Length: 229
Image (cartoon, rainbow, N blue to C red; front, side):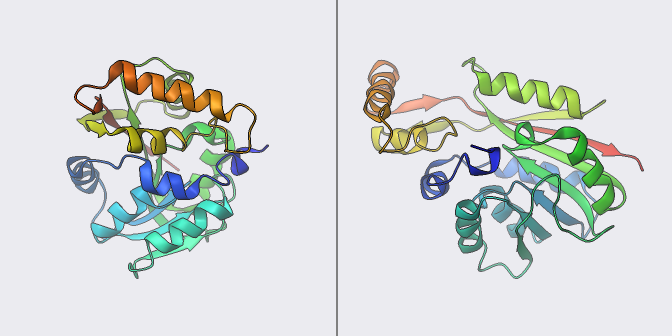
């Protein structure tokens, strides 16, 4: 299965259960971009981050290669005339040359072919381009995901600025189960390992929840650097 198809069948769960991003992080991003900046939000998924950019008044090209995710993206952003949904990838956005000022990717940089993505950033940028990667991380939990994020940001950026913003998330058992269905590795109901996976997910909730709530001390990390043409 290609990276593009890893989230097929999970878009509805992703849209409903993935955590968002704190407003202070969006305010910070607004403070570092040019006035009236045009954004390309790459790997836009179901539009969780795209919608926040749109609410700040930015013109956004929301680029997403997965058809299932793109359908959710189109629905989430339908009310925003400043958002255009685009069928494209990080390495081949299909956007015109020199069309954007800022490029963002939320929870997505580690999926990209970084060399080809960098080339695409230069192609679609109007000039020197600000590239921003945003991630929700839980520092207390070690995982392959965290390792991939660190590797991708270390490889892609030369001298990035990074800021952190608290983004604590509280889960009920129901919302925890929904969230744990959104990962690329989570089995779908017809998978033979589905029942075992659900037992493990419930066990985590039973072990770590307090008074019916499981807390994750999520931190939103914003990485950015200006890439000079």
